[in-house]
Amino acid sequence: MKQKSLFILFGLFFCFYSHAQLNVARLDLSGLVIGKVQGSYEYSFGEKTSLDVSMYYMPNQGLQYLNLINFEIGNDYIDNPLEKTVYNGVGITPGIKFYTSSEKDAPRGFYIEPYLRYATYGLSSEFRYRNEDLTIANLTIDGNSTSIGGGVAMGYQFIISDLIAIDWSIFALGGASGNTVVNVQEQDLQEDLYTMITEDFEDVEKFYGTYTVEQISDNEVKATAKGFLPCIKMGLSIGIAF
Image (cartoon, rainbow, N blue to C red):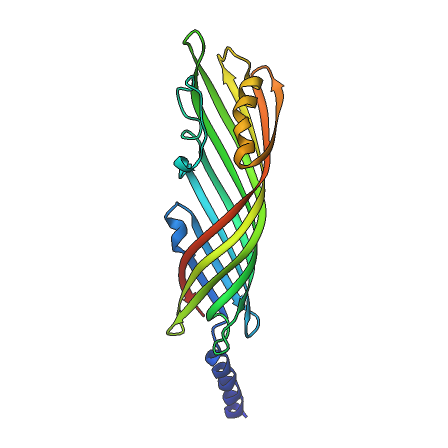
């Protein structure tokens, strides 16, 4: 009886082990280039389908690629507010991968992946402004931004020696609807803060969407921007299959 039970257990183990790996855990290498730590977990629940969930964390850092943003500031700004901005954030991206190869089962081969994405960021900035009498005013910005979106990605996942997983995200096209709220406070500013911020936020409509500015107190305003941004991305991640 014991021998029969051991034989059954061995058979079940062999069937499970010989089956294609159902789980993949990966680290995104391309995200590390911009200071983003992102990990993902993939579970195959069908011969050609899998659930993929990735999460990322971005510690405090400055804005990259400022030269791509056509944001003009007046000569009265001693500091560029964008260059002084520090932000951090977290995000989650669930998706369903559909593997198309007739010879390979998930999670191997070429795939198409519809996905959703949610992200939230905090941001802050401190900068100086020159008044008309050449005295210096100090301004601070504190805010947060959230976005919800999605898209479609395509890629190819290699499983090497039934252990090493390399996921090449060849191309992904998507977009996100975002909402950004910032509070701006001033100290020793001689001109009207509301008018100043309203004029500065006029550039928001050129590349993002609509905005509103609300007076909170004599030295504080709240600005809200809402809009939609497209997204194109590629990436490479490596991990283990088990």
